[in-house]
Image (cartoon, rainbow over all chains, first blue to last red):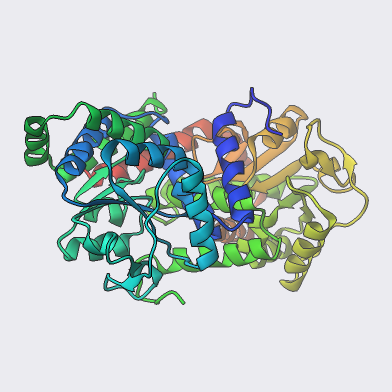
Length: 243
Length: 243
């Protein structure tokens, strides 16, 4: 039991939940390390949604708003951390949800699907095909899901697939706490924020979106600028420790 | 298999080794998350020993040089990452090595001891007692080890124990990649560097140490200054991404 007055209480509770999900096979062991990296970057932005993250979330909402066939790609970490937020995102935006895993087994797909469904999400099913030119199992997608999506929202993504999807001409929106990562730099748009904070921000922006506002946001954004703003926030946060 | 030309090859190989050690019970699942946090900070200092880390390593060597009874405290992550470096450190400095775990089981103690012994280290044994005022199992130490040490070298430490040891008047030297962590701030001295780089640096400095040099280093250092220098290095590294 973690004492609720521990200075890192929330962080420790989430860490324990992920460890439990790893024991149950939902989260890959490598996913725990990935979560640790995310924790470090979240710490550096002060564990809050920064101004640039809020702006990026509005652009993300606009991109999803304009997409013909948006698909939310869910992996083990995303399901463990934010299944309810994914379900709400689907309810509001009407997007498809597909489970896509680096460490893919049928058992993990089934478990992750169940976690999402328990929160009310509808998860695409079918026989996956090698839709993306990659060596590993993240190439496997559903032809009626990511295979035919014009926009893929990929929280906690690996750089390889992000790059491959971009080369296929897809719009890739990622949620990644590391503004320097390959994923962050290769994506069409990166929301540098923690997942359970970012998804509700995108949902909120989507709810109030108009066609005109979506046009303005999509034509006016610059991902490199947003990433630099995120880096500048970290520098500001760190510089306070130098005073 | 990770392709050797992958941009993050070394990092991925170490991550896989830790995942394997977690499957074998050597590394706790929470240890994988901790490693991820360390990876993020290592990334931010450019995955090299900075000037301030080299200076801190020399001070660490001087503190160990002057100690009456230095003990290296080893946990699962330390054994998985740097068992050979720990054995070399012991060979050169003559320190004791004790296994001390947050998630303590006899089986984990035995496995970690074996990993260290396989690299040639001598590991203290005996019946642990509650030597440190802490609620959790890190309180358990050997009376002839950490219990009577004047200096404890604790790589990858948690903040609670660091603080408790300091309050008991012990010199605590830590190796911690996060210069903002409680451990880093509470320790007598923090080497902000990756473990397999830091331990050899301390060994090298120890080898060339004289009593006079040790005196000068120990009387002249300021941990807060060293931590600020480490933070400034991160700020410099990040600022390059803003150009």
